[in-house]
Length: 430
Image 1 (cartoon, rainbow, N blue to C red):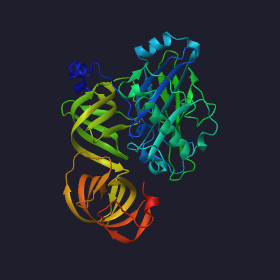
Image 2: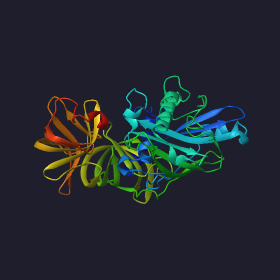
Image 3: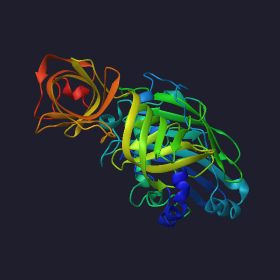
Image 4: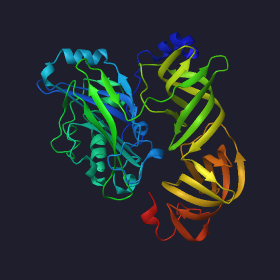
C-alpha cells in the first residue's frame, strides 16, 4: 500500500525487535499452525509459528456437514521463506537426519481441557496437521481430536516443550515434542517427513457426535532442503484487495469475522499495525478481529504493486455488499447463527423481536451475538434484512422459538438466566 510505503520507516522502527507472531494457546480458541523440525541424529529441534490460523484453514461458516476427507475447503496457498535462524539450524546439523511436520489446534476451552462439552459441534474444536500416513485419516473420532488438542495445550503451556512459541515467532531453545509426530498417538506409525518431500495436509473438527469427525483434505505441504515452506491448497489464491491511497479506502472481496463471511466490504484504513511480508498470501481470505479492530490483509493491490500479509487498523466501515453465516431477519423471526448467553454459546437459534433498542452500525464489535441476562437485550454483531446488512444492532427479545434446531414448545419468553431451552438443554447446549 502507498500508506504502508510512506510509513515503512516508522513502522519498521516500531516493529524492530518484536516477533510477527506468537502462537495462542489451543484452549484460547485462537491458534496457528506450527512447523516442527528435528534432527534425529543430534536431537536438535526448531519450531516456528507460521502465522497461518486454524480459522483460515477451517472457516466455520464453510464447514460441510458429514464431510469425510472433503476437498470443499480452499486451504491456503503460501510460501514462507526460510529465516536466518532456520538456515543456521539446518547448516549445523547433518542433512540426512532432518525431519519435519506441521501441526496445530484450537478450541474454546477457557482454561479447561478439550472434551465433548467444548469440541463436539462443528467449529468448536479444530485441528490440522501434515502427515506421511494416508490410511485411516477419515476415521478419527472426537476422542482423537481431544487427544491432539490436549497434547498441544500441554506442550504449549507453561513448562511445555513448545512454550517458547507463546512469546516468540521461532525458537531453537525448545525440546522436541516427542508425541507430536504421531499426532499424540492418534496416527500410529506416523513420523517426521524428509526435507524436500511433500506431505498431505489434513483438517478436522467435530461432527455433533462423539463418533467420526468432519475431515478435510487441505492440500499438501513441503519443507524444502533450503528451509522454504510451501503449502498448496485446493483453490487458487484469493482475489486481492484494492487500496486507494487518496481516499484511504480498502475494498475487500471477502472478510471473515467470527464465523461469518462478508463480501465486497469497503473500509477506511486507520494505522498500519504490521508491514507486508512474503510473496504470497498466508490464508484464503482477510480476517477482521473485533477485539483489536485489526484487519489481516492477505493481499492488496496499490497502483502497480501487490503487497501480502499486512495488518491494518480500521477507522470506519463504509459499506458491506452481503454476508453469509450471520443472523437473518424475515420481518417476524430472527435466526441467530451463534449467541453467547452467560457462559454458554448456543447455535442456530430462532427468536421473535419485541423491539429495536439501537442501531449503531460500523464494524462488528463482536464475533458473535451476546444476550444480556440483566437487560434481556440481544446485541447482534450483524444481521441481513431485505438485502441490507446491519451491524451492532441491539434488540429486545420477544420469545424463543427454537435453539440448536430444536423447537421450544411452547415458545418461551426472554429468560433472565442462561437457560435458553427446556428439558433437553443438556443435550443441546455447547
